[in-house]
Amino acid sequence: MRITAIITKEIIHILRDARMLYFAIIWPVLLLLLFGYTVSFNVKNIRLLFVDFDRSRESREFLHTLEASGSFEIDYTTNSSRTTCSNLLKQGVVKAVIIIPKGFSKKISRGEEAEFQLIIDGGDSNTARVFLGYILGASQYYRQKIITERYSFNAGMPIDCRIKFLYNPSLRSQNFVVPGLIAVILMIIGTLITSSTIAREWDRRTMEQLFYTPIKAHELIFGKLFPYLVIGLLQTTLVLLTGIMVFNVPFKGSIILYYTASILFLLGALGLGLFLSLIAKSQQIATMLAFLTSVLPAFLLSGFIFPISSMPFILRGLSYLVPAKYFLNVIRGVFLKDSGITTLWSDFLAMFLFASFFLGISIIRFKKRIS
Image: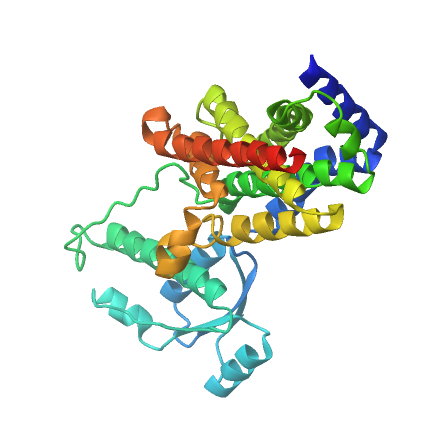
């Protein structure tokens, strides 16, 4: 009954604060829409200069292969100097130049390797790497097409590599980014919305009134936590539906596993927010601490964007303390791979330990305050 009273009290606080409801329910969906559309590793509409000194049917077929990929905006010319090409790259008018030398078609006709030159603006290294992959893929496709059409044997290709991408065959970046965003957004919002709940009692000088009640520490903590857990599950549902319906991210796994992982993760994030609220003296300090302990680790150390395996040893060690890392493993596994508990049990265990630690330390910390 005492927990019910605390839950009722907290719900009344939440309903009176329209900004809190907006922040807790609408903001996660807005963040997912914003980042889902802007954070993309696909590269489109790359401006490319195609210099065709050969002026042959073969060079134009290669040009059409590049155009068919849909990734390039191609300017075609049969006469351009290297100085002009360099200036266009330097001014940013084009991002790359392909130069087809004279004799390109003759070498193909003789069954020899026909070279062409590719010059890429490497100022943006990520775009340059993606662009290089597109060009190599298009040239490989064109090469295979010529061999198939003109020769009865795989001349020059003693090894035939058949590539197959599992779990994300089209390599859509949204399929990779959106599940990661769900983990990052829930970590940030979950920590922030509870970071001020107890600090607010201190600011409004209502904590002393709670001291005079027979409420126990664990009753207060779980009473404060429950309304935010319900809000967190509502957030989880909204971002799940947004990811599937707006970004067309496939959901191949178990919905039960998804919600079980979400509850464990939310308990940990909400527990961290409650702990920060207990140790802070004001809502402003609690919010600042929540921001520092949720935003930066979730973005940088969870594996959301940067691979943890490529980080320095110390940062790899610190990443084990970031719960978003484990939830991100689970959510990507459930979304894309239909992974089960036998694969993800260690991530579930880590989230359970994290939630138990922060809820436990919050209860202990509150007992010390009462004494």
